[in-house]
Amino acid sequence: MAETKKGFTAEEKAAIKQAAAERKRQAEGEAGEQDLLTAIEGMTEQDKPIAEGLHALVKRDFPQLMSRTWYGYPAYVSDGKMVFFYQLAAKFKTRYGHLGFHDVAKLDDGVMWPTAFAILEWNDDVEKRVKDLITRALG
Image (cartoon, rainbow, N blue to C red; front, side, top):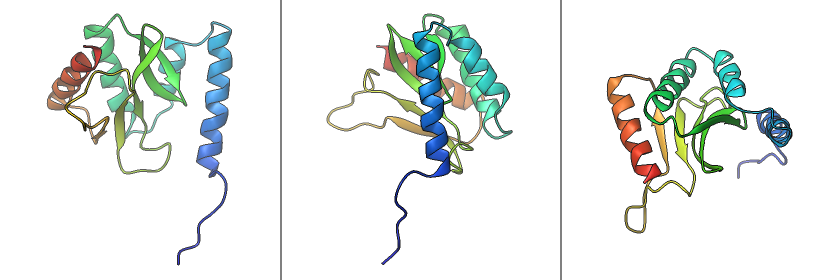
């Protein structure tokens, strides 16, 4: 039987600390788009073009959404509620990042539907598909 480790990994501990700092900045009214832009600037070559493309799409086509970070991820909020985020591949050393949707996203399709979508690169086809998902998520 494989041995399992107890407790959080270093990456998970860092994410928890990051989330606590974000909540504090949000409570003080200091968090927002600048945090998101700073986070994007520090991303790897794999994640940065995807996050930049996503952010440009949101700013251009969904200006009603507020930008912020969530566990260090670019995240987008409507009416005070998180709708979606981009989870970096580098954060937990996975082979792809993914676009994740929270439960307020109106992606419902019967009794089962996807809420996360792997993204390997940002291109015109990906942008179109993501735009369609966001449009649907916002209802």
